[in-house]
Each structure stands twice: as structure tokens, then as C-alpha cells.
Image (tube, rainbow, N blue to C red; front, top):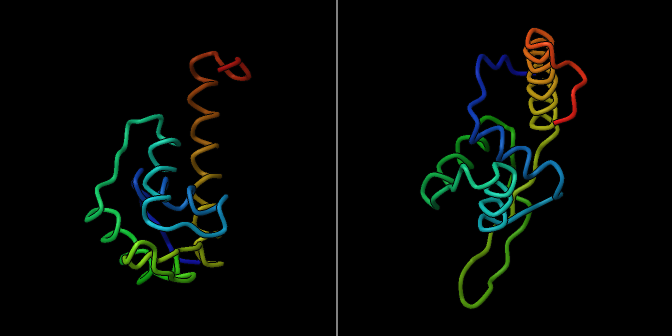
Length: 112
């Protein structure tokens, strides 16, 4: 598994969007990221595709098919095994840190 020092929120959300979907095209990813972030993050096309290219280069996502819709190419993306591992490691780390923060605030186990 790769050694990740910091996974930024957009990367975290893109990988999380793909984790539950099997595969998504760009517009589907941006919609899911916006939903997961409760509207805080709206990825522009250029930002999204640059991120997907970087994540593909790191072996975390892969192209999972293409089709032409209304005369435009629609490319689908999916998590790789390495991407699932990286997302799991990040999710576990974030959960641990969140539990510590809630505990220090005296809110451990409190409903959200």
C-alpha cells in the first residue's frame, strides 16, 4: 500500500463517491461529491479531470468503460484495489481522530 501523508478532502470525497457506486462518469462523480459534502464542495470539470488523471497515475482509480451519449464521450471511472485500500486506511485514520476529538469534547457516543 502506498504511504499517504495527507489525503485532501476533494480526493477523499472522489474516492468515497466511487466506493459505493461501482463506476461513475464525471458528472456523476461531481454530483455525488456535492451530495457527500452537503454542498460545500462543487468540483469544476477541469479540477475533477485533473484529479482523476492524478489518481489514475497513482493507481487509485481506473477507467471502467466509455460510451457516447448525445454525441459526447462519457468515460466511467472505478476504484482499483489499491484505491479501496487507500480509502479504507484514510477512513480508519479519520474515524480514530474523530473519536479522540469527540472524547476530548466530552461528546463520545453523543448523537450527531
